[in-house]
Image (cartoon, rainbow, N blue to C red; front, side):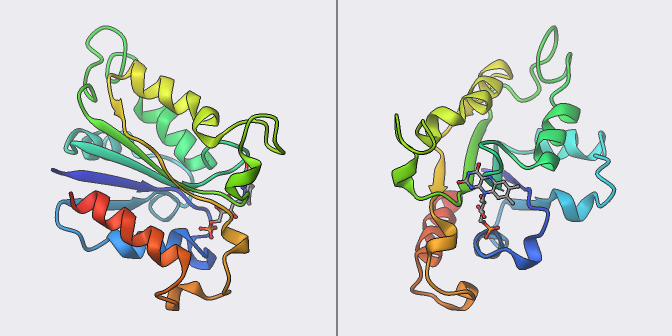
Length: 180
Ligand SMILES: Cc1cc2nc3c(=O)[nH]c(=O)nc-3n(C[C@H](O)[C@H](O)[C@H](O)COP(=O)(O)O)c2cc1C
């Protein structure tokens, strides 16, 4: 299985969670990691390279920090520029059909605030509905999302070096998922 991991994070160098998650899966065979903000510092997506990378994968992973209950801007731009009429949807737009979309996201809020009537009103799974519908429209199968909650509350400022941390455990789950 070939997997394309699209990492979107504007400040990955100083990230607590996503830097470690990216490091945990980078060396897996059959996995291509593309950190969008690093590849496109001027925010202009290469509309030849990105569709080609997507086309060659059986599974596409969106790895991102939850930003305003959505994806960071570069991952939204990837969707806007790559998932175009006649390619991803509409007449002849079947290029991604049959592939799997896996969402791997980190959140500032703890899981307890993501419930009906809670501080953030809804479970994360429901807030991800725009991506669920997008996957449906382009004929992809949405896998069960992986969510790491409450990142700021996870102990340790430099968890990148703490193998016992919750982030390390989540990273191991993520690696096992992509290795399967
Ligand atoms: C612009 C912005 C918007 C954010 N929006 C949310 C949000 O909607 N929900 C949430 O739980 N956390 C939100 N956060 C917190 C980030 O999701 C959190 O800091 C990140 O997942 C931690 O991962 P990192 O260590 O890789 O940066 C936001 C952070 C920023 C900077």
